[in-house]
Structures are given as C-alpha cells and as structure tokens.
Length: 360
Image 1 (spheres, helix red, strand yellow):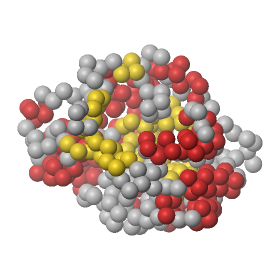
Image 2 (cartoon, rainbow, N blue to C red):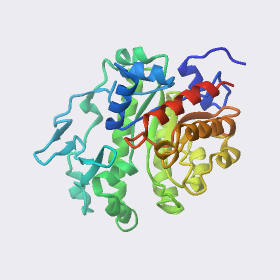
Image 3 (cartoon, helix red, strand yellow):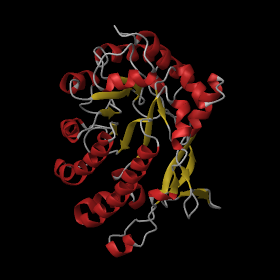
Image 4 (cartoon, rainbow, N blue to C red):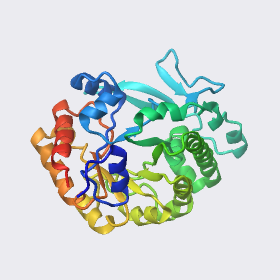
C-alpha cells in the first residue's frame, strides 16, 4: 500500500496503470461556469480552487501560457461582439437557458481549396510566443501533474474551414484538408517542443483534442482515420515520449473502434470516456483495454451532472471507482468540460465523493 503521494506522483503512477494511494482527479470548466464555481467555493485563486477540489492535474491554459509576442492581436472583439483570435478563428458569446457559451460563428477558410490561396493565409508561428520565463512560472505548480492542453489539428482545421466544408474536403479536396491540418499540426508540434525545452521536467502531459466521434457512431470512416488522422496523432505521441512526457488524447463520442489504433500510435491516456455514447460503457472499455491505456473522465455530463441529484452523482462516482478504477489506470473527471447547466451541489458531490471513496 503506497504512502501519501504528491499529485504529480499519483497521476504518473496511474498513467502507468499502477495503483497509487488514491484515484487522481481532474477538473475543467468553461469561463462562465468557472466564475460561478469560484464564487461558490470562495476561491481567490485557481490554485486554491484546485486544492479545495483535491484535483491533481494543473491545466496550464490561460494561467501559465507562454507569453504572446505576435505581430497581430492575440484576440480582439469587433463592434458586432465577434471575437477573433490570432488564428483568425471567430466566435461569439451566445446566451443559453443556463448561461453564456462561446460558439464559432464564422470561418475564414470556408470554401477555399486552392493551395496557393491557403498558403497566403497569415498562419501563426510558434515563435510568436516568449518561452524564456516558462520554467519559473510553472515552478509554483510543481506538486501537480502539469498538462499542456493546447494542441489540435483536425478540430482546428474544422474551426477554420467550417466543419461541413472540412469533412467534404477530406474526401473531395484531400490536399486542401491535409494542408490546413498540417499547418495546425506543425504549429502545435513546434509550440509544445519549445515549451518542453524551456521548462525541462516540468510538464507531465501533452493533451491533443480532436472531436471525431458522434453520439452513436464515429464521424469519419476507418480508412480516412488510418490514412489522414492516425499518422498525425503519432507525431504528437513521438514528440511527447522523446521528452519522457505522456500524451492524453481527447476523443469524445462513440469512438470504440479507434481505441486499439490509438494505443498502437502511442496514446497513453484516453479522454473523456463519454458513457452515454454508443459502445462507450466504461466497464466494458476497462475490460477490453484497461491493461494497455489509462482512462480519464467518464462522469456523465449529459444527464447525471446537469440533471441528476447529488445522490445520483455520488452513486455514479462510486461505480466508476469500483469498476474502471479498481486496479489503477483511471483519472476521475467529468466526461466533458463543466458548463453552466451543472448545479454546484453536483460538482461538490463529484469531487467530495471522489476524494472520500477513491482511496485504494
């Protein structure tokens, strides 16, 4: 039975399918929900909030990023309320029944398939960031497993071209789709490598996020996945492993048919385990793949967290710990980012139950 571990030790032991002192936990919320959670917990800092939730992973996005020094504005909001970032991606805040959500509303590369035109787009460069003080700024988070969670190529391409146009391009204009994916991939490979070089030994996890699953089936066929997606995922796995860092892959929806391929490509952690999607029952996934990959997430954000009672949340968390967490290889977290539809008492039930019942 291990003694009390640091959060970093706990997470790294879990990723290797070892059995730490307790099940590690993670947390993320969209900006509007995060404000509500800060107020509910009377947290004056992000670190204080993570301590109150007993969270073990520090997602550095928006808190300890490399400093932007690029030649265009990192982001700006125009007179119509549309925000544009340095990629040219455009979003707008939409008020929903439960709170604000940031949604993509315009696509700079929509309808463009000419490689010459795409080459003229003002693509960002990882050298637009200053990494010189990154190690110093991460030092205060050393007790956590620090995660750099910025990377994407499929999802970024869809956000630039528009999802419909991008999916069509994968089949009819493959050169254009690959060009856009590669510009995104090469940016993040460079961005990650500069961070890993600037802060050696600080970062434990690189996270790659590609939403290629729907509720009841994969979004793309296996041939496209094998030819166009998997080799690019492997590039990130190879980069991470060359620095003794783990790769988390965010792949929501019904994606069971891809999991063995992801393992072969070198993915260490599968996120988010969406339990209400088809063929994504966590217990079955543990039985099939638990000896080969670490699972992250699995607490339902489609019904249990937004609509269930605290008692239902507690029951689901206990079930996850007993099934996919029973012999290690499991990081407890919501199966998607927390949004404003999740009641605060359910968030409290999730993290208090995970901490209370997660000891091995």
